[in-house]
Image 1 (tube, helix red, strand yellow):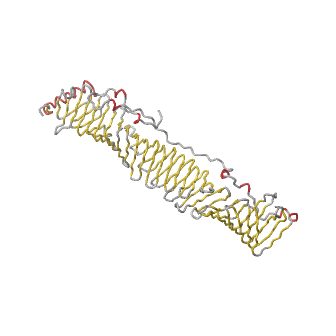
Image 2 (image 1 turned 30 degrees about the vertical axis):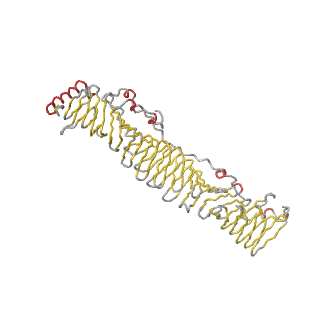
Length: 564
């Protein structure tokens, strides 16, 4: 202790000296109070070395910032201080920092800390090995890797910047947010400490146990677990992928919604659903979609398209059910239809067309109170159909004008061959009007009859074989003796104007929906570089830092944003 001057002997001198400094030079000079102080001019020229005693730590104050440490080296002429050992730094009641080493320039108000740096604010806790603190800008900065612990998650990045007035972190390069239920990876994140709101920029993923969200611009509330995503956004879960212009996702309720240009892909069942508004309920395994909704069953030979004002897909992956409501339209290359509502179970290949259904297969139009189509789930081809009540089959003659083959009855069973209607079995109260031709396709008569049952075989879409069964009564009448007004069975309704000839006809006659305007998420402001070139050129010669450490490197700069 012989080189130190005891505070007990010179305490009054120290306080008077501090008071004099404040009087003569204002509060711009760093003030230091310590248990001991000494001068070692040969080793620390122009410096005063302060050390703590048993009763007094080294205490430093400057314009609202307070610091405690084991030892301080103060260059009064330069207003520059180095702090060593158990360094603690406070700014008001909002920022608290600990480190092994720190230095502070009272002129530029730039602080630097290293060695197990920990900075605490009311909502977060930062850990890094080196930290820069610009008191003028009220910003803290690291670029050698850091970890921020929030109330709900842990955030890590190579580069980080804390804006104290906004209570916002900007994380750059390999940003990871770790939560017990999910992990976020992003190129750039703006994180607000008071709310836990994270804004994601650049390629970003939110990966949980049952779902993964991808976006290139998005928002996520890390405390309430919901988010909004735009720009190439996508949600993957349960072998389903949901894409759209705008996506909303709530992890707590397992609910998602999508707006505009939506595609829901089911990889297990090889199906796609499109529309402009959708809701997804993961716990119920259901999807609701509207605004030009269309379900596409992708098949190797020929895909099936179902459009309705509203579509619902429910059930687990091995038992998906598609329901369509209002103005249902069905299309595949060799089959089309319409009805008010539809029900399709993918696992069994059964499709039910309900309320005013009409089906066109080849040259045949089939109507009834309801129509059931049965597909072979292995071959993905149509196998059979059933029509319940008021079954009516009409074939328009391709040679004769205004001529229609007609069969009606209570119920119908139809069988397909190579995806074309091959045979029809009509049951109960069967009536028929059939145009009979010779081998040269010349009309020789019109057959009108009734029977309990009737079996008709088609060839190339034309009636080839007629086989009445039980209680049959029919006659073939020469065309000239068959009145025109008797050539249509009661209930005849040729609905050719409703027939679909292409995929575009799924929406024929319907107005183009007005798409919801997506407000989106604005790009962040491009922040000015952290280091001030003027301050960087005035690094104190006694600092551990050199000019190269205070250069704003290109690889550390924000690349996503817009200039203010």
